[in-house]
Length: 93
Image (tube, one colour):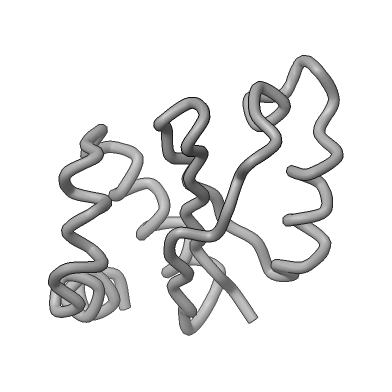
């Protein structure tokens, strides 16, 4: 399964956007991140949003699109307006 995931840290008030094919292993990586990794700056990372994708290419394209937006509001709107996710999946089919 190919997943785009968004983590949120209350401590940093920041989002982290990533892609994985195994979410459980990837989440463990973030929890045990080395000090030079971005997610090591906080210990309260929690799953904000998870988007299941049809294939790796689609997942990477959606991840890139969300990162390119550089907007907390856009990320929050992905939850408020699920149609955005459907449009992203269609666009990057």
